[in-house]
Structure formats: structure tokens, C-alpha cells
Length: 403
Image 1 (cartoon, one colour):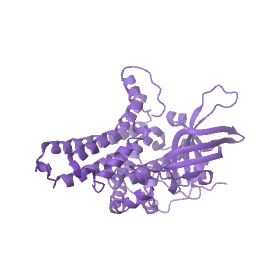
Image 2 (cartoon, helix red, strand yellow; image 1 turned 120 degrees about the horizontal axis):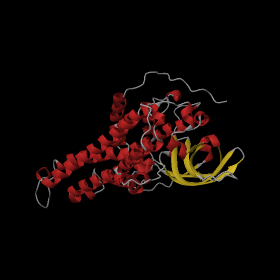
Image 3 (spheres, rainbow, N blue to C red; image 1 turned 120 degrees about the vertical axis):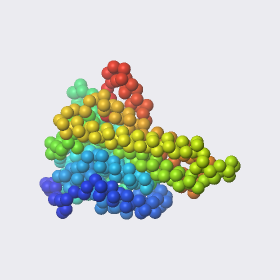
Image 4 (tube, rainbow, N blue to C red; image 1 turned 90 degrees about the horizontal axis):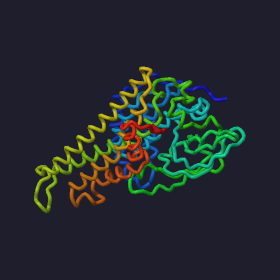
């Protein structure tokens, strides 16, 4: 029989400011670990422990399981600060911490499986619907190979995506689900060999005929409609937020912090750069100055829109209202643009620094690589959601489920 949630030893929750201060204090250590982390294709255990000790994984975790159950805006503030030191660290933090939110949407028995003996346990994921599912007595059987499971080597459970076929005799459609598996039921394949975000350790996952009880699955339809079984026990406003709205933003927000770090690096380099070809100082070059101004304005705009959208969503939920469907589509579209807009900032900054920028020793190169890698994520493709938003604007009906 599962044990009850363990009480917190310290009942005082940290403030938003304290959490952000903790993130900023980590920057020197994260920067010192950068090279080794990239070469190892995974974050150091010390970084993950630092995040645990600082309480970052508890920000979106239910209070009944020792979490802080804070609004997403608090978490995004922390993620932005971490991204200014290392985008890979911010990426893993974002993805893994979001899972502390999603497991709260599962049946309470799944929550007990994960947290009954240790509320600091973490979960990685790969939501690609590539798994093969068979119905068996008492549940489902899952097999397959998934890629891109960020931070998986530091986690004891995994979320995996698959489409469940209709029950025998049922005329209903197949349904997309997230499956929750313990570490003993899957293998990690170290196949993460990429040009950017190297330290995310987003390796592959292999499963061979693992049994998964029904209660350890989460239906995408429940995430969309807000009919998640976990809301029976986690009934705070946070868990009435559509799952998709949180997930797409933990994917895109690291790019904003990285773009700011790239721009700060550019400020430092441009302040003393004099072109060896023209003899012109960057500080006196109107093109260089306008590039910096445009970049800073873009970053400020993206940040303002991020926090505005979540302020509105949480206010709507607390007032007992439903977030309008058209707004949900628009919010997702706005998130999907972030990675590309931030990568474009890095592109412009690289051009302004001339030939010196292309050396591997350039302090701007890794930011450029990470930002360009980030825009490859499916959640960061505005074309996938833009046509639906445009159709809504023109009065047409659309059927987007991951919003």
C-alpha cells in the first residue's frame, strides 16, 4: 500500500525573489561546468543537485507532495535567469520541472507510485507518438524507441507518447496518451550527438513490451478539456491551466534568456571592437548600434508577452472562467515564434562581429549554436499552428487539440 505524502520539514515557501536570486547565484558555477557538460553530452549531477537544493523542481509541484505550487510566472523567471548562464541547463530544468506539473494531472495512484517514498524524484520524457500499444489484461503493453529525452540520465521515470487503439468492439477513435514508466522498464541509448544544446543529454529511450496499468496513462483529451483525473486531489488554480500552454513555454523560454546572454556578450565585444578593414569602431557604427537596439527591443517584447499571457490565463482561471479557445491558439502561436525570433537575434549579432565571430573560441558561438538548435523543436514551429490562428481570425472553425 502506497504511503501518504511526506510532510515538508520547512513549511515556509520561498518567495519569487528568493528563487530568482538563487538562480542568479548559480551562474558562475554553471558557466564553469559548460565545457565538460557539452563534452559529456549531459548535465553534471552537481547541476541537477543544485536545482533540487534550490527548490526549482518544486515550483510547479503540488503542495500535497512537498511542492510550492506557484504560478508559472515564478518558474519562468527562474528559467530565464538560468538560461543567461547556460541554455542547456535551462532547457533541462524547464522540461523536467514541467513534468512535476503533468504528473499532478495523472490518477493519484500514479502520483503515489512516483512520490510516495521520495518527493524529489524526477521524470524525463519523449512525447513522439511512436510507441506500439497493445491491450492486455489489466492495462496496456508498450514497445518502441523514442528520441530526444532531455535529462533522462538524471531521472527515475519517463513519460512516453503513444496512440492507444480503440477497445475491441468500440467505434471510438484512437487516443493519444502519455505513458508513465519506471526506470526498470526502459533502456537509455546514448545517441545525443548534436551541434547545439549538447549538454541537455537528450538521449534515446527503448522499451520492449513493458506493462503499463491504465492509471499510469494520461489522455491528451483530458489535458485539453481540463478533465484530468489528478484534479480530484490537486484542485488548485495551477492545475486547471491547460497542459499544452505550460509545456510549449518551458520549451521556448530558455531561448529568451540565451538571446539576452548573447546580446550582453555582444555589448561587451562591440564596446571595444574596431574593424581591421575599415578602422571603424562598433560604438560609432549606426548599423551596429541599431542591431543592438532592435535585439533588445525584441527580447523585451517577448518577455512582456510571456508574462502578460500567463497573468491573463491565471486571472481567468482564478475567476472561475474558461480560457477562450481562440486565445489558447494565439498563445501557442506566440510561443512558437520565440525560438526563431531569438535565433534571428543571434544571427544578426554574429554578422556584426565579422570574421572573429566564427572562431570556436568566440564567446558568442555557443549561444548561436544553442539558439539555432532550439528552433528545431516541433513546439517551436509557428507554421504548424499559424494556419489555425489565421483561420480563426477569418471566422473559420479549427480543431487544434494541443493548445
